[in-house]
Figure (cartoon, rainbow, N blue to C red):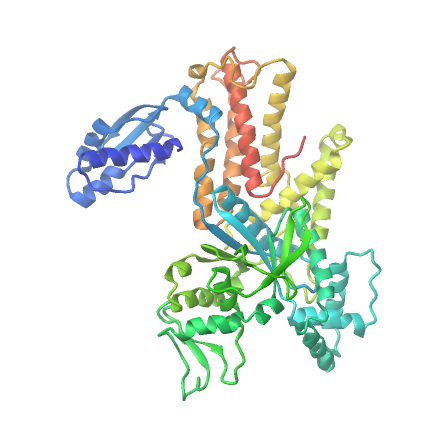
Length: 610
């Protein structure tokens, strides 16, 4: 248990011993100009609940709190309770004890990427991939079992148009160009063709073949090419679910059967909905001008929302139906599975059966996703409704221009990654020619370039729009991944020099009590990581981890550049007095580990040098 959690427990136990009202005793860091290191306003809440003077309640609590190890004293400051750290003991605890990450448990299904299999991924798609992959990493760290799914719309019009363009224009793949990029060129060509309206019958014929599964091998070739792009970015998947399999598995009928018994669904005999199967979502989506959602038209044709509802019900394990088989291996040799008509039933309940489902889909789908969520409430699955999460994100524009794959206004994800690595290498060559001449210069540039792209997609809240600009995304200073990476490399360089000088870095000989407050401040920042992971898992957003990475780098840089009153370096590790030097070297080991753990949560690697 981390120290803030121990303090929370101690305050609540003291309240119970005094028969004070039970409250959630939030523990906060005290402002820099206030006494103490941590504090709580719990006495305010107790006074509000039971009456009385909050300052008197705070004084009573202080007399009855049992302090955990690492806390030197506790004081009442009016209605506030302030705790003072035992600096040496706290820093030593941070250094010697592994972080205790949240142990939340339960299975989470995350669906992300889900790019139409008709062209390559572009820069706009990267936000979806990076958000979903980072969320999966964070939730695993928080103790969840995570299953990452990628939905393949193999019966959609976009796939049909790209495949039609091959035959119509006599296009031949040379086997060298990346297949999804080559396929996408045909899609753009067709949509720019003024004769396209006259080609509708041919496109529809391809759509029928896709629905029949005849052209699935061609779509699989596209999907594999798209996955190579995602692998390069660091994303990994457990299961590919194909639209044709979802439709063919009877999910729609099973979901409609579940909804049929609800008091919120009906089949009107007259009026504009006569003969249709409709769902009243007014109780779950108040304020709608039209609260009735048509699931099945009077002619028996299912609406798109009905299919999405069926798929969501399956993710939560409300019914079975699909078969699965291995599809391919990821770069680490792990098997990616796929739904398949010729696969095996999921007798071991390997897939789906989630306690929580997160769909990473852009903000244009806010309303449809709310309808899907509401359908769980209509079905009487209130808990599942609350744990049906739409991780909505805003658009990505490119240098101020709206991205359109149909019009060819985009930079492919592969080209963006190539450019990022090229620019990173150029910067290295300009800053340090010796560094650029290293054998691993290309690998260093890869980590910097891809880290810059991932961070650019994560540092803002998902609901904020991103205008992707090369100079901003690839800047090696400011609110960027390279800024954090450089701090991590700097910590590693300190340790390398210490080892070359023969100093111990494992805490042997450390005089923890001799450390000044400046080291305590850095240790407190390092200790925040489990709390940050818990917050990111709770609000379903990786941006708080990205911001913490910046905070950690900034705290370390402030510590590194600190000066004494005489203007001399205050934290030169190797020149510190014996005992303090060993304590600081052990702190640097823990700091470096914190950088690794933090950046790994958002899929960013630390380069060997910068």
